[in-house]
Image (cartoon, rainbow, N blue to C red; front, side, top):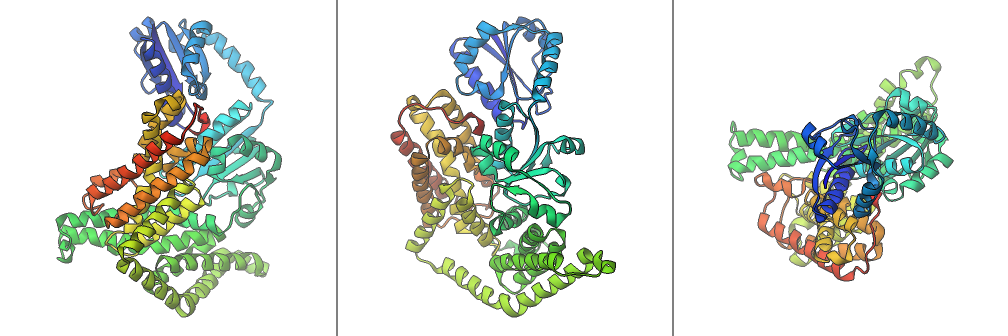
Length: 584
């Protein structure tokens, strides 16, 4: 039997890859010859088989989540299914294809699509935006989960992802205008002003990822109309999650993160020429240190404070926030002072904007003159005379403690941070530990031992789930084994969310074993005094010379934690249960 598998999903990679692999492995076990036809989010072919391969094919399975052009397969026996349907039981899909596939008729398919469109019109039109602080995993996984849940409920949905490379699949004005409801599944602040006048519902990426059906139901039932104007828009949307200081802090961290990565790696590159080579003026090492340590690291705290204030007060808060953040750096108040400066500037700017009445003749000057001036004055004077000196003392004490702490304290700190990273896999506790590590990394050019512990511990849950699905294959269903392979790769990239399908299905076993493995990994990295120059990248940062101070001990710590999780969960898991397909 010669089979062609066509896969496509709205957000691009994860689901279509897993669906293709699941069907391909099931077909290979039957001795079938398999060719794949992978399509992008727009439905266009990326690797379409040639005419001879199509002519020789006995069967075609189109596992798709978007509209695709299948005219090349006219006359071939073809079965079309949703892309997520291929994951739970690929063998059943192959049996169904053999029994139900019929010669593909493009004209008849077009008529069916028209009839289907009439049925879908009875559903709702939904647009959504997903965004998380790092813009890597939760952003795209939440988008796929919402898409699958909405389509299964008969609704039309378009999702814009605001990831680490900016907005992808941006929503058009026409799509927003036609939408019945807008879902903002965002862990950071995004500009909601373009949705003014629409019914809007706010939730988190975690809620959209783990319970997408509930998120869509709540949005349709409880979303409220967004008022016009930036400040009104920011406060009037219906919400399934709190929008307090935590979200403002994560917004600041998300904008600071690229600066931390660039600065840390540039400093590491300067060490290639020798640890002290940058001290010789005019050399490349000195230039790299000036760019990384002298410029990028100086901009970290102003960016953090500025975008915390921007999240609170919109654009008028940006200037006073950055001024306060720069003063925090100059006064030695560090990232803690920058956080306080950001909140102070943001809330002062918002108070002036909302509570300070102005004559109509000068109201237009508020956002460009009055708010920046008064908020900058209050923030700057507060930092210089009230906040700066106490926060500098706290930062000096914290830095001194980290530099002088004994082995026992270091191991304890690493264990606590490691366990926090594995507790909720991208949730508030995980992000609190990560923010702490990034903040310490911004305080010096010598790298951060806590950051090394945090990244290593964040890698092991996903790697461990991959190990468990391999060593205890009989306890895992086929879909779980597929998810385990993907989880292993995601873990190597420091994307701990790869373990979420397993945590969602079996939290009482997965969470404790992951916390134990993460604590061991964190403790070992602190014991080995490993330091890290970059806050993200997983094992790929090892390709940058001196990005990790001690490579072999770092790898040992990650391997030990991953094996503890893998073998631990393999022993604890009972039975054979499918993971939730929409979170893969």
